[in-house]
Image 1 (cartoon, rainbow, N blue to C red):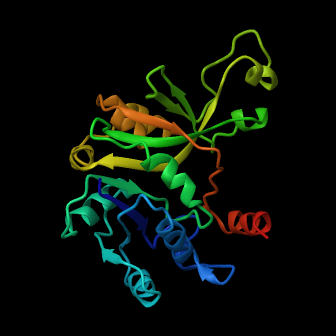
Image 2: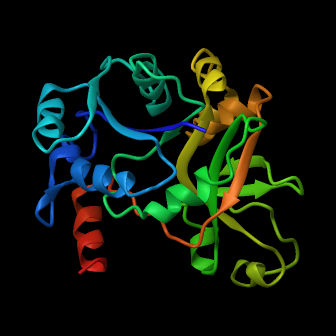
Length: 245
């Protein structure tokens, strides 16, 4: 099976413009993501998909694979699809690797890609929540998973609700999962989901994956033991550097 890893890296960011090029302990953020993703043995190729000449040139300079994509793409999924169409080789799956996670572990990628098979439409990762305070954090998306290992719903609120118990004891009665924002798309499904209309769930929660569920696609869910740390602001970067030094 051939799997293409794509790192969407747009230049514009409301809270952290140009963060793909920011220095992270001696290397740019996008270079760190690229180097970590390239260590995943299950990926056939890793490429950065950008909309900015400075990022394109930077990736070229450090020896990475990169392609230019339209700056008007509303989501990383759309950028991934355009990048896929530019490839000369055929791939069975595409993995969308977040471009703002410089400390992503190759094992996280392998925890997802090692399970892929032709019956899977879309797939993502979760990690069991072990801190009650994380349940109420809207930045940590919670995932409800059914008995078949497929996502039922994603929400910024703590779901399922544990009735008649204070929230600090919910973990004693129910398993809760936090979403790790890495996605795998079967090639044909990636093309299909880029043409879907925005769903009301997605509009409410601000979560693109709810569009796929709303329109009837299945998202297979696999567990990882590793945390995910995205960099959305300069303050996030300071905290991340402290955690990794």
